[in-house]
Length: 96
Image (cartoon, rainbow, N blue to C red; front, side):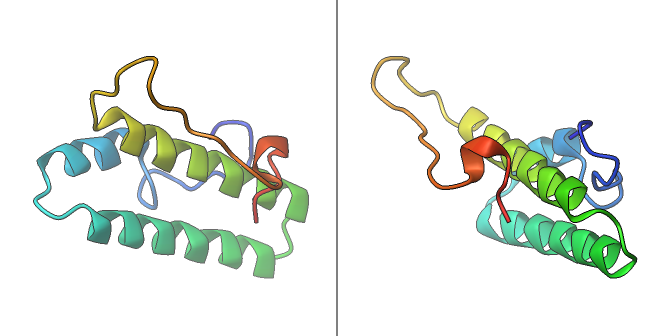
């Protein structure tokens, strides 16, 4: 998430801490929901404070990349049998 000056600070979202929590959690969905909500709140607050919307959209896209990366790493996927494909503005870093 270092591409954006408005990346969530570690007390809002830390990918390493999130991944460790996912690995040990008995129920993972609440962890995803909590981190998405906290990060959305942070980005909305930055928007209300007048920060550049393009930077905020990039920060959100980078955050979703991290969430997906953590989710993907939880499983031992066979290399040639699965793909993750993005649609819409995601590939352009314009996820909002």
